[in-house]
Length: 420
View 1 (cartoon, rainbow, N blue to C red):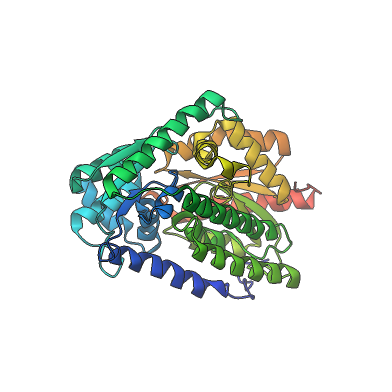
View 2: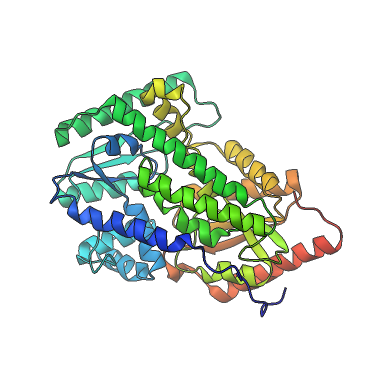
Protein backbone atom coordinates (compact mmCIF):
# COMPACT_ATOMS: atom_id res chain seq x y z
CA UNK A 1 0.00 0.00 0.00
CA UNK A 2 1.33 3.42 -0.96
CA UNK A 3 0.71 6.73 0.81
CA UNK A 4 -1.78 7.61 -1.95
CA UNK A 5 -3.89 4.49 -1.45
CA UNK A 6 -7.40 5.41 -0.23
CA UNK A 7 -8.26 4.06 3.20
CA UNK A 8 -11.43 3.56 5.19
CA UNK A 9 -13.79 2.92 2.25
CA UNK A 10 -16.32 1.71 4.82
CA UNK A 11 -16.59 5.30 6.03
CA UNK A 12 -16.90 6.45 9.62
CA UNK A 13 -18.82 4.34 12.07
CA UNK A 14 -22.56 4.94 11.92
CA UNK A 15 -22.48 4.99 15.72
CA UNK A 16 -20.38 8.15 15.73
CA UNK A 17 -23.53 10.28 15.63
CA UNK A 18 -25.01 8.33 18.53
CA UNK A 19 -21.78 8.73 20.49
CA UNK A 20 -21.78 12.48 19.93
CA UNK A 21 -25.37 12.76 21.15
CA UNK A 22 -24.75 10.52 24.16
CA UNK A 23 -21.70 12.43 25.38
CA UNK A 24 -23.32 15.74 24.50
CA UNK A 25 -26.24 14.86 26.80
CA UNK A 26 -23.78 13.82 29.51
CA UNK A 27 -21.88 17.11 29.44
CA UNK A 28 -24.97 19.30 29.09
CA UNK A 29 -26.48 17.35 32.00
CA UNK A 30 -23.56 18.33 34.21
CA UNK A 31 -24.63 21.96 34.09
CA UNK A 32 -28.25 21.06 34.93
CA UNK A 33 -27.27 18.98 37.94
CA UNK A 34 -27.39 21.79 40.49
CA UNK A 35 -30.79 22.97 39.23
CA UNK A 36 -32.01 19.41 39.69
CA UNK A 37 -30.47 19.37 43.19
CA UNK A 38 -28.06 16.61 42.25
CA UNK A 39 -24.60 16.84 43.85
CA UNK A 40 -21.55 16.85 41.57
CA UNK A 41 -18.42 14.86 42.44
CA UNK A 42 -15.13 15.30 40.62
CA UNK A 43 -13.63 11.81 40.48
CA UNK A 44 -10.47 10.21 39.10
CA UNK A 45 -10.64 7.50 36.47
CA UNK A 46 -9.40 4.74 38.80
CA UNK A 47 -11.96 5.40 41.52
CA UNK A 48 -15.15 3.34 41.92
CA UNK A 49 -17.93 5.29 40.23
CA UNK A 50 -20.74 2.79 40.83
CA UNK A 51 -21.64 4.06 44.34
CA UNK A 52 -22.03 7.57 42.92
CA UNK A 53 -24.51 6.52 40.26
CA UNK A 54 -26.35 4.39 42.82
CA UNK A 55 -26.75 7.47 45.04
CA UNK A 56 -27.75 9.89 42.27
CA UNK A 57 -24.44 11.77 42.46
CA UNK A 58 -23.17 13.14 39.14
CA UNK A 59 -19.58 12.05 38.41
CA UNK A 60 -17.27 14.44 36.55
CA UNK A 61 -13.91 13.33 35.13
CA UNK A 62 -11.35 16.13 34.74
CA UNK A 63 -9.06 13.60 33.03
CA UNK A 64 -11.67 13.14 30.29
CA UNK A 65 -11.89 16.89 30.10
CA UNK A 66 -8.12 16.98 29.58
CA UNK A 67 -8.54 14.65 26.60
CA UNK A 68 -11.19 17.00 25.20
CA UNK A 69 -8.78 19.92 25.52
CA UNK A 70 -6.23 17.90 23.56
CA UNK A 71 -8.56 16.70 20.82
CA UNK A 72 -9.94 20.23 20.33
CA UNK A 73 -6.37 21.54 20.18
CA UNK A 74 -6.70 24.08 22.99
CA UNK A 75 -4.62 22.24 25.60
CA UNK A 76 -1.43 24.22 24.94
CA UNK A 77 -3.26 27.49 25.57
CA UNK A 78 -4.57 26.38 28.97
CA UNK A 79 -1.32 24.62 29.89
CA UNK A 80 0.50 27.90 29.34
CA UNK A 81 -1.95 29.68 31.65
CA UNK A 82 -1.21 27.14 34.38
CA UNK A 83 2.52 27.44 33.75
CA UNK A 84 2.23 31.20 34.06
CA UNK A 85 0.69 30.64 37.48
CA UNK A 86 3.74 28.60 38.56
CA UNK A 87 2.87 25.03 37.57
CA UNK A 88 5.79 23.17 36.03
CA UNK A 89 5.73 22.13 32.39
CA UNK A 90 6.84 18.70 33.62
CA UNK A 91 3.46 18.26 35.32
CA UNK A 92 0.85 16.04 33.65
CA UNK A 93 -0.81 18.01 30.83
CA UNK A 94 -4.27 16.78 31.90
CA UNK A 95 -3.66 18.58 35.19
CA UNK A 96 -2.10 21.66 33.64
CA UNK A 97 -4.85 22.01 31.05
CA UNK A 98 -7.62 21.55 33.60
CA UNK A 99 -6.07 23.97 36.09
CA UNK A 100 -5.43 26.50 33.33
CA UNK A 101 -9.08 26.29 32.27
CA UNK A 102 -10.18 26.87 35.87
CA UNK A 103 -7.88 29.88 36.21
CA UNK A 104 -9.08 31.29 32.88
CA UNK A 105 -12.72 30.74 33.76
CA UNK A 106 -13.52 29.26 30.35
CA UNK A 107 -13.21 26.12 28.27
CA UNK A 108 -14.42 24.29 25.13
CA UNK A 109 -17.81 23.17 26.52
CA UNK A 110 -19.80 25.94 24.83
CA UNK A 111 -17.28 28.41 26.14
CA UNK A 112 -17.29 26.92 29.63
CA UNK A 113 -15.06 24.64 31.63
CA UNK A 114 -16.33 21.97 33.98
CA UNK A 115 -19.04 22.81 36.53
CA UNK A 116 -17.87 23.37 40.09
CA UNK A 117 -17.77 20.28 42.32
CA UNK A 118 -19.68 19.76 45.54
CA UNK A 119 -17.11 17.19 46.64
CA UNK A 120 -14.04 15.46 45.21
CA UNK A 121 -12.78 11.87 45.24
CA UNK A 122 -9.26 10.87 44.26
CA UNK A 123 -7.38 7.58 44.45
CA UNK A 124 -3.81 6.35 44.58
CA UNK A 125 -4.25 3.40 42.21
CA UNK A 126 -3.35 5.27 39.01
CA UNK A 127 -0.74 7.92 39.91
CA UNK A 128 0.25 10.34 42.64
CA UNK A 129 -0.31 13.36 40.39
CA UNK A 130 -4.10 13.05 40.61
CA UNK A 131 -3.92 13.23 44.41
CA UNK A 132 -2.04 16.54 44.35
CA UNK A 133 -4.17 17.79 41.45
CA UNK A 134 -7.38 17.07 43.39
CA UNK A 135 -5.90 18.73 46.48
CA UNK A 136 -5.32 21.89 44.43
CA UNK A 137 -8.90 21.87 43.19
CA UNK A 138 -10.33 21.13 46.64
CA UNK A 139 -8.51 24.19 48.00
CA UNK A 140 -9.56 26.33 45.04
CA UNK A 141 -13.26 25.52 45.44
CA UNK A 142 -13.14 24.98 49.22
CA UNK A 143 -14.85 21.61 48.87
CA UNK A 144 -14.37 18.36 50.81
CA UNK A 145 -11.93 15.81 49.37
CA UNK A 146 -11.52 12.10 50.04
CA UNK A 147 -8.42 10.23 48.87
CA UNK A 148 -9.04 6.53 48.42
CA UNK A 149 -5.89 4.62 49.37
CA UNK A 150 -5.42 1.41 47.35
CA UNK A 151 -2.18 -0.56 47.85
CA UNK A 152 0.07 -1.38 44.90
CA UNK A 153 -0.41 -4.91 43.53
CA UNK A 154 2.99 -6.17 42.39
CA UNK A 155 1.71 -9.66 41.56
CA UNK A 156 -1.75 -11.09 41.04
CA UNK A 157 -3.95 -12.18 42.67
CA UNK A 158 -4.56 -9.41 45.15
CA UNK A 159 -3.65 -10.56 48.66
CA UNK A 160 -6.45 -11.02 51.24
CA UNK A 161 -5.05 -8.41 53.62
CA UNK A 162 -4.92 -5.88 50.77
CA UNK A 163 -8.53 -6.57 49.87
CA UNK A 164 -9.58 -6.14 53.48
CA UNK A 165 -7.81 -2.79 53.63
CA UNK A 166 -9.44 -1.58 50.41
CA UNK A 167 -12.84 -2.75 51.69
CA UNK A 168 -12.35 -0.43 54.66
CA UNK A 169 -11.40 2.39 52.32
CA UNK A 170 -14.55 1.84 50.25
CA UNK A 171 -16.70 1.83 53.36
CA UNK A 172 -15.08 5.12 54.37
CA UNK A 173 -15.77 6.50 50.88
CA UNK A 174 -19.46 5.56 51.12
CA UNK A 175 -19.71 7.18 54.56
CA UNK A 176 -18.04 10.31 53.12
CA UNK A 177 -20.58 10.44 50.26
CA UNK A 178 -23.51 9.93 52.61
CA UNK A 179 -22.26 12.57 55.05
CA UNK A 180 -21.68 15.29 52.46
CA UNK A 181 -24.71 14.66 50.25
CA UNK A 182 -27.20 13.57 52.93
CA UNK A 183 -28.12 10.62 50.72
CA UNK A 184 -28.07 6.96 51.65
CA UNK A 185 -26.57 4.18 49.55
CA UNK A 186 -29.06 1.45 48.72
CA UNK A 187 -27.37 -1.92 48.36
CA UNK A 188 -29.98 -3.06 45.84
CA UNK A 189 -29.38 0.02 43.69
CA UNK A 190 -25.62 -0.49 43.91
CA UNK A 191 -26.04 -4.08 42.70
CA UNK A 192 -28.13 -2.88 39.73
CA UNK A 193 -25.43 -0.38 38.79
CA UNK A 194 -22.75 -3.08 39.08
CA UNK A 195 -24.87 -5.33 36.86
CA UNK A 196 -24.93 -2.55 34.27
CA UNK A 197 -21.15 -2.21 34.61
CA UNK A 198 -20.76 -5.93 33.97
CA UNK A 199 -23.04 -5.79 30.92
CA UNK A 200 -21.11 -2.78 29.67
CA UNK A 201 -17.75 -4.49 30.08
CA UNK A 202 -19.06 -7.62 28.36
CA UNK A 203 -20.13 -5.55 25.38
CA UNK A 204 -16.80 -3.71 25.36
CA UNK A 205 -14.97 -7.04 25.28
CA UNK A 206 -17.25 -8.17 22.43
CA UNK A 207 -16.42 -4.98 20.53
CA UNK A 208 -12.72 -5.52 21.08
CA UNK A 209 -13.04 -9.16 20.04
CA UNK A 210 -14.32 -8.28 16.57
CA UNK A 211 -10.99 -6.57 15.95
CA UNK A 212 -9.37 -10.00 15.73
CA UNK A 213 -10.92 -10.28 12.28
CA UNK A 214 -8.87 -9.48 9.20
CA UNK A 215 -9.26 -6.80 8.12
CA UNK A 216 -9.98 -5.32 11.51
CA UNK A 217 -13.39 -3.58 11.48
CA UNK A 218 -12.10 -0.79 13.73
CA UNK A 219 -8.82 0.88 14.60
CA UNK A 220 -7.43 2.92 17.47
CA UNK A 221 -9.11 6.00 15.99
CA UNK A 222 -12.46 4.38 16.65
CA UNK A 223 -11.68 2.86 20.03
CA UNK A 224 -10.02 5.85 21.68
CA UNK A 225 -13.11 7.95 20.97
CA UNK A 226 -15.59 5.17 21.74
CA UNK A 227 -14.14 4.54 25.19
CA UNK A 228 -15.70 7.76 26.52
CA UNK A 229 -18.97 6.15 27.73
CA UNK A 230 -17.23 3.26 29.50
CA UNK A 231 -15.32 5.83 31.54
CA UNK A 232 -17.86 8.57 32.25
CA UNK A 233 -21.08 6.52 32.03
CA UNK A 234 -19.95 3.20 33.47
CA UNK A 235 -22.87 1.54 35.23
CA UNK A 236 -25.60 3.38 33.31
CA UNK A 237 -28.23 1.80 31.05
CA UNK A 238 -27.60 4.51 28.43
CA UNK A 239 -24.03 3.31 27.96
CA UNK A 240 -25.17 -0.32 27.74
CA UNK A 241 -27.64 0.61 25.01
CA UNK A 242 -24.95 2.46 23.06
CA UNK A 243 -22.42 -0.37 23.19
CA UNK A 244 -25.02 -2.86 22.00
CA UNK A 245 -25.39 -0.75 18.88
CA UNK A 246 -21.61 -0.40 18.47
CA UNK A 247 -21.08 -4.15 18.88
CA UNK A 248 -23.73 -4.89 16.24
CA UNK A 249 -22.10 -2.49 13.79
CA UNK A 250 -18.63 -3.97 14.25
CA UNK A 251 -20.02 -7.50 13.95
CA UNK A 252 -21.57 -6.56 10.60
CA UNK A 253 -18.33 -4.94 9.46
CA UNK A 254 -16.34 -8.03 10.40
CA UNK A 255 -18.78 -10.26 8.52
CA UNK A 256 -18.56 -8.04 5.43
CA UNK A 257 -14.76 -7.81 5.79
CA UNK A 258 -14.87 -4.02 5.99
CA UNK A 259 -12.56 -1.79 7.96
CA UNK A 260 -10.46 1.36 8.04
CA UNK A 261 -7.59 -0.42 6.24
CA UNK A 262 -9.17 -3.08 3.99
CA UNK A 263 -5.80 -4.14 2.54
CA UNK A 264 -4.18 -4.25 5.97
CA UNK A 265 -0.60 -5.42 5.85
CA UNK A 266 0.58 -4.81 9.40
CA UNK A 267 -1.42 -5.43 12.58
CA UNK A 268 -0.16 -3.36 15.51
CA UNK A 269 -0.77 -2.89 19.24
CA UNK A 270 -0.53 0.57 20.84
CA UNK A 271 0.70 1.06 24.41
CA UNK A 272 -0.26 4.12 26.49
CA UNK A 273 -2.81 6.90 26.20
CA UNK A 274 -3.67 8.37 22.80
CA UNK A 275 -1.94 11.41 21.37
CA UNK A 276 -5.20 13.30 21.53
CA UNK A 277 -3.97 16.36 19.68
CA UNK A 278 -2.66 14.44 16.66
CA UNK A 279 -4.84 11.67 15.27
CA UNK A 280 -3.18 12.40 11.93
CA UNK A 281 -0.49 10.00 13.06
CA UNK A 282 -2.96 7.11 13.17
CA UNK A 283 -4.11 8.01 9.66
CA UNK A 284 -0.45 8.07 8.57
CA UNK A 285 -0.16 4.45 9.72
CA UNK A 286 -3.38 3.62 7.86
CA UNK A 287 -2.06 5.07 4.62
CA UNK A 288 0.88 2.69 4.83
CA UNK A 289 -1.22 -0.40 5.37
CA UNK A 290 -0.89 -0.54 9.17
CA UNK A 291 -3.85 -0.76 11.53
CA UNK A 292 -3.93 -0.78 15.33
CA UNK A 293 -5.95 -3.82 16.35
CA UNK A 294 -5.50 -3.32 20.09
CA UNK A 295 -4.49 -0.76 22.70
CA UNK A 296 -3.51 -1.46 26.28
CA UNK A 297 -5.38 1.66 27.38
CA UNK A 298 -8.74 0.82 25.81
CA UNK A 299 -8.35 -2.85 26.72
CA UNK A 300 -7.88 -1.94 30.40
CA UNK A 301 -11.49 -0.75 30.65
CA UNK A 302 -12.60 -4.33 30.10
CA UNK A 303 -11.31 -5.31 33.55
CA UNK A 304 -14.22 -3.94 35.60
CA UNK A 305 -16.50 -6.97 35.57
CA UNK A 306 -18.58 -8.54 38.34
CA UNK A 307 -19.96 -12.09 38.41
CA UNK A 308 -23.26 -13.00 40.09
CA UNK A 309 -21.25 -14.43 42.99
CA UNK A 310 -19.38 -11.12 43.27
CA UNK A 311 -22.62 -9.23 43.67
CA UNK A 312 -23.42 -11.06 46.88
CA UNK A 313 -20.63 -8.93 48.34
CA UNK A 314 -20.53 -5.78 46.19
CA UNK A 315 -18.06 -3.90 48.40
CA UNK A 316 -15.61 -6.82 48.34
CA UNK A 317 -16.05 -7.18 44.59
CA UNK A 318 -15.23 -3.50 44.03
CA UNK A 319 -12.21 -3.83 46.30
CA UNK A 320 -10.85 -6.61 44.08
CA UNK A 321 -11.59 -4.94 40.74
CA UNK A 322 -10.27 -1.51 41.61
CA UNK A 323 -7.09 -2.95 43.12
CA UNK A 324 -6.09 -4.56 39.82
CA UNK A 325 -6.38 -1.60 37.45
CA UNK A 326 -3.67 -1.34 34.78
CA UNK A 327 -1.48 1.28 36.47
CA UNK A 328 -1.69 -0.36 39.91
CA UNK A 329 -0.09 -3.69 38.97
CA UNK A 330 3.55 -4.70 38.59
CA UNK A 331 5.40 -4.70 35.25
CA UNK A 332 5.32 -8.50 35.06
CA UNK A 333 1.51 -8.42 35.22
CA UNK A 334 1.39 -5.70 32.58
CA UNK A 335 3.73 -7.71 30.36
CA UNK A 336 1.57 -10.82 30.65
CA UNK A 337 -1.49 -8.81 29.62
CA UNK A 338 0.38 -7.25 26.69
CA UNK A 339 1.72 -10.59 25.45
CA UNK A 340 -1.76 -12.07 25.63
CA UNK A 341 -3.13 -9.17 23.60
CA UNK A 342 -0.42 -9.54 20.95
CA UNK A 343 -1.20 -13.23 20.58
CA UNK A 344 -4.98 -12.80 20.60
CA UNK A 345 -4.91 -10.11 17.92
CA UNK A 346 -2.07 -11.63 15.83
CA UNK A 347 0.12 -8.54 16.11
CA UNK A 348 3.10 -7.86 13.85
CA UNK A 349 4.57 -5.24 16.18
CA UNK A 350 4.01 -2.95 19.15
CA UNK A 351 4.16 0.85 19.22
CA UNK A 352 4.99 2.43 22.58
CA UNK A 353 3.89 6.01 23.14
CA UNK A 354 6.52 7.33 25.53
CA UNK A 355 4.16 9.83 27.10
CA UNK A 356 5.86 12.86 28.62
CA UNK A 357 2.85 13.51 30.82
CA UNK A 358 2.11 10.04 32.18
CA UNK A 359 5.28 8.84 33.87
CA UNK A 360 3.45 6.03 35.63
CA UNK A 361 2.30 4.55 32.34
CA UNK A 362 5.60 5.11 30.53
CA UNK A 363 8.02 4.02 33.25
CA UNK A 364 7.95 0.27 32.49
CA UNK A 365 7.88 0.50 28.71
CA UNK A 366 11.53 -0.48 28.17
CA UNK A 367 10.90 -3.62 30.22
CA UNK A 368 7.73 -4.33 28.25
CA UNK A 369 9.47 -3.82 24.91
CA UNK A 370 12.24 -6.26 25.81
CA UNK A 371 9.63 -8.79 26.87
CA UNK A 372 7.77 -8.45 23.56
CA UNK A 373 11.00 -8.82 21.62
CA UNK A 374 12.37 -11.75 23.64
CA UNK A 375 9.17 -13.77 24.08
CA UNK A 376 7.39 -13.06 20.79
CA UNK A 377 10.17 -11.83 18.51
CA UNK A 378 8.13 -8.78 17.51
CA UNK A 379 9.66 -5.43 16.50
CA UNK A 380 8.81 -2.43 18.66
CA UNK A 381 8.74 1.32 18.09
CA UNK A 382 8.98 4.15 20.61
CA UNK A 383 7.25 7.45 19.85
CA UNK A 384 8.00 10.40 22.13
CA UNK A 385 5.05 12.74 22.59
CA UNK A 386 2.54 14.09 25.09
CA UNK A 387 -1.09 13.07 25.28
CA UNK A 388 -2.49 16.62 25.00
CA UNK A 389 0.38 19.14 24.77
CA UNK A 390 1.55 19.47 21.13
CA UNK A 391 4.67 21.38 22.19
CA UNK A 392 6.28 18.05 23.13
CA UNK A 393 5.78 16.50 19.68
CA UNK A 394 7.97 16.66 16.57
CA UNK A 395 5.91 15.52 13.57
CA UNK A 396 8.73 15.07 11.05
CA UNK A 397 10.94 13.11 13.43
CA UNK A 398 8.07 10.82 14.44
CA UNK A 399 7.10 10.08 10.84
CA UNK A 400 10.69 9.24 9.99
CA UNK A 401 10.74 6.68 12.79
CA UNK A 402 7.40 5.28 11.69
CA UNK A 403 8.67 4.83 8.14
CA UNK A 404 11.77 3.00 9.39
CA UNK A 405 9.65 0.77 11.64
CA UNK A 406 7.31 -0.20 8.81
CA UNK A 407 10.31 -1.00 6.61
CA UNK A 408 11.44 -3.45 9.30
CA UNK A 409 7.99 -5.04 9.35
CA UNK A 410 8.00 -5.32 5.55
CA UNK A 411 11.46 -6.92 5.56
CA UNK A 412 10.24 -9.46 8.12
CA UNK A 413 7.28 -10.35 5.95
CA UNK A 414 9.49 -10.69 2.89
CA UNK A 415 11.75 -13.03 4.86
CA UNK A 416 8.78 -15.11 6.00
CA UNK A 417 8.59 -13.70 9.51
CA UNK A 418 5.34 -14.53 11.26
CA UNK A 419 3.06 -12.43 13.39
CA UNK A 420 1.80 -13.79 16.70
